Length: 249
Image (cartoon, rainbow, N blue to C red; front, side, top):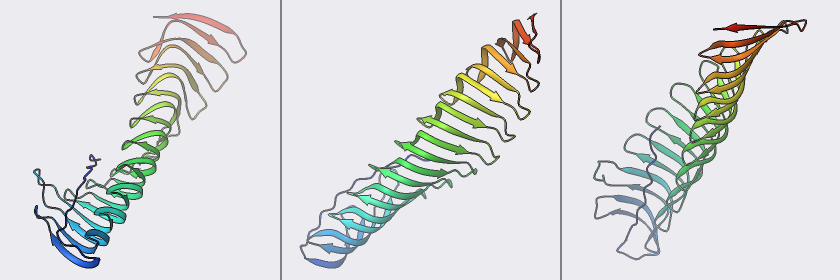
């Protein structure tokens, strides 16, 4: 998803009139066609900017107030991005739909020209996120769904899984616990389809330290988990409660 460009512009009109339809070409080559009221762009109109030093330009069709985009309108960028929604004093504010040139589509709230509030974003590869946004990023409570059927539901910070959440894999196996910067980190458990559960501490996505596996037959195994397996003293408790200890090197 591309960075959203915030463009502010000011217009100066030379003639004074109460209300009329005008076609105006500005000194920089930008044009406006629409209603002029009391020497200002008011009502419906079309604005096409000249290219900036990077060759970028915009075009806007919609409502104006006091020389600014204000009300409903469509803002198209020369890179192929397009916003369709509400403007207030020249910036995107309120409900809108933002389509990016790479196929990503966001629909929801905008604040101060940024994606912020409640919304839904659909990515070109088929994944989608619904939930809270701050400063153009997934932030707060939300749900991320993937095309293979897997999904995450929980907390986000700065676009990443962070805090409490549940990640369900495409086969139905799921992890529930704590995430830090997009990885399983802290207390958590993995629950498998056959009922087996593995509970313990995670670091950088993997079990580390004290871990317990609960098996479907009501037996369990606990000990220190290192590099994906038990090491050191391991305690096995049978389905009828008999405890056995062994050392695994």
